Each structure stands twice: as structure tokens, then as C-alpha cells.
Image 1 (cartoon, helix red, strand yellow):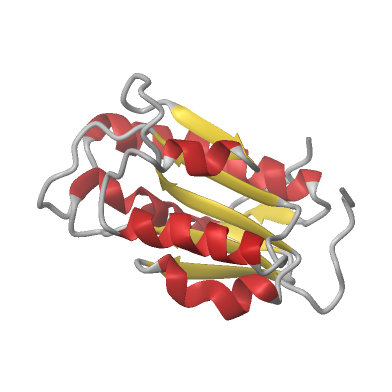
Image 2: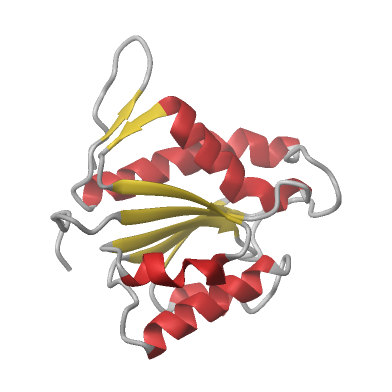
Length: 174
């Protein structure tokens, strides 16, 4: 697996979820914080996606796929979870919401078509509550910074620059 960005092919960072269903909105909330708080390499494309199956053409043309979502790893609520390759579909067997059918189907279709990026990772947080509501649970909200740090560390490991905005911008490295 190359640790060098592929020129002309974006790396997709996809925030998956439904911000109207409490902790199911983890992916969207994390993407918002990335947009607001980080300067990212120009070859990184941030995508809000409540229905992942619609991303097939973008995934086919990408150099990598980083999914951010609520992940039921049967761990304590607020735990940051990282999955790679074959681990991802196994954890999506327990559906937290209807959009996860789209994630499973997207990965399966990409694999069948031979276009699933070798760099495919899912990062997320074990949800505490999934019900109608627009706020993340307090424990998940407190875990968002740890999740973002894992995201930018993964990006740096793949050779993409990520700088936190603020008084002293520091490049995130492994």
C-alpha cells in the first residue's frame, strides 16, 4: 500500500449519518469540525453523505476512502473505533440506521467492480443513544476530538497534510 497521495485522484473523507438521529450524526458532526478546525491537503475531498450508495462514481475515481460514522462495536459508549478492509462489513451487520445498508452495499459493489480503494478505513465512535434528536449524547460529544485526532493521524500516515487552525498551527504526524 502506497503512503504517497495519488496525483489527480482525491482521497474521500465521508461523513456518514443522520444528524436528526442523535449519535447517528457522528459522521456529519466530525466532518463539520474538520471543515471548521483543520486545513487539509487540497487532494482531500470532504463529503457529507446520508446515503452512501450515491457515492459509487466518486469512490471509483478516488485514491482512498475514509468513512466516519457511528459504529456499533459492542464497546462502551464514546469509544473511538477504527476498522480496516474486511473488518468494516462485519461491523455493519448490526444496523444502527437505514444509511448503513448503503455503506454495506457501496463497499460490496465497489469490491465486485474491482474499484474498492486499497486504502479503505472506517473510523467512528460507539454511540450511546440513537433516537430522534439533533444533539449528540454528552459522552459521544466528548469523544469527537479524539476521533478527529485519529482521522488526521490516518491522513498523515497516508501522506496527506493536516494542520489544525488556531494560534499555532502544527502539522499532524504519526
